[in-house]
Image (cartoon, rainbow, N blue to C red; front, top):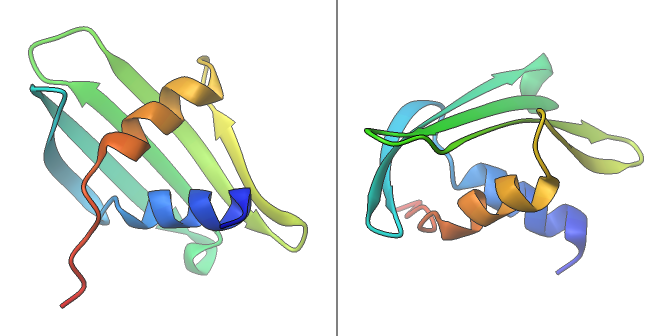
Length: 90
């Protein structure tokens, strides 16, 4: 899987709107908003009752999928996204 394909798959794990997840035994609220027909996504997350946060924009361009974290390292965003369960598309 290419890095672009992995990022697309990770973003697809987050349903549109607000969702609750358990990550490493901690409750999280994660929100995804798509714009421009899905070519742009904003993902915000916060640990409920804790201090952890993550926020990023994802752009799907002709040159590939780009992750732009908001004031944090990309690996911090990717770690949260990788910890999410894969979505059941049935």
